[in-house]
Image (cartoon, rainbow, N blue to C red):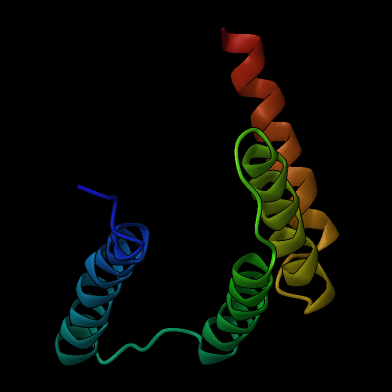
Length: 107
């Protein structure tokens, strides 16, 4: 019996739905209880960066070990897009770097 091409797509959709549904439900509950909403500009910037990364990932087909390089490049691209969209700033990157260095010193 051959492997279905829908298996990876099904796994991706399950992961998407599994993350999106609780996020939306949590946002609704937080709004109902606290009358607070997420920062919409942040949500749109992240959605834009994620959408661009998704589209590039869908059109860039690789197999084997090249997949590791593809995922690394797409991950870096996502953070670069967030930086270019001004969602991440130099101070955020400095804080991240300090945190990583502190965690490394604890090991």
